[in-house]
Image 1 (cartoon, rainbow, N blue to C red):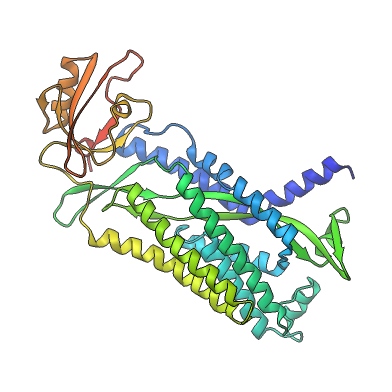
Image 2 (tube, rainbow, N blue to C red):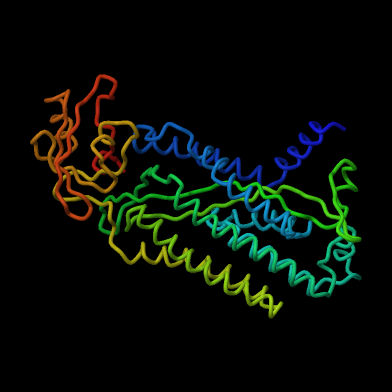
Length: 398
């Protein structure tokens, strides 16, 4: 077979893996639901571009390439059994609404599952015999099981560190409000953050599993052991809701706590070189630590007051359309429009009337979330739409 044919077949094997298919479907559904919700509740599409798909395919390319090179040149073999279990665990975790499909959760859970299988499966069991045919070390009662778990743990720590960098640099400024009523009947806005992206990760797989299926699959040998290289699609995603903080503040708080978790995880990894059983405990700590970080975020949101509710001084901004007069005036979600063209604002009709009185220029008095009052203004051009390109809480019929 030619090199081109081999490459196309390898790519086909990559895209046919369940995590790749599921990830693409989730990204498409996320975009479709956003469009449908925006048209239903906001009567306009705030963000017309498909940023979900762009984020899905681009965010993980550089970290995936770097980690793949480390995996191959350092030598970090994983078993075919773990890869299968990882796919199963990811699918099961999707039942939680992809809150926990990041490797901090999926890699950790699948690694611990591999260890449990190693403890309870024997060569005599039916499943053990099947695994043995796949050249699996799971049924082997040897220290290699802890070494395998250690490698999964190292992968997870590397991916956690890369996630912190990606989220710190990545654009997460597309805020689409969702609405609910408080116990007192007041309408408030909240923002569901759903970053989801794909990391192509090249891993080293011991044994001749792939050459038995595809005789053209490239292999290499170290001593008497043969190895293959496979690219697996790793899904990275969270889901968290912001209603008592600015989205940027919530992200920074999560990044700080994940940074602490990553430093602690590195210390635990160093201990695994002296105590091999520590790799299993470290993986459990990483899993529980990730859950605790998300729990702390949820507690902050529950304890603090709603930040995006109605304001007695004016109209609360809950969405700003890109490339609009509102964006040129540096309006942000949470701002309160106090005056428009020197007209006090208490209803959306006041805002419409003020804009109708001066169709070529807009001057706003705005109260920021911290209480600061600012004046912002911009000319209105012919290519602008007939409004400022913003949505206020008072626009919503809930």
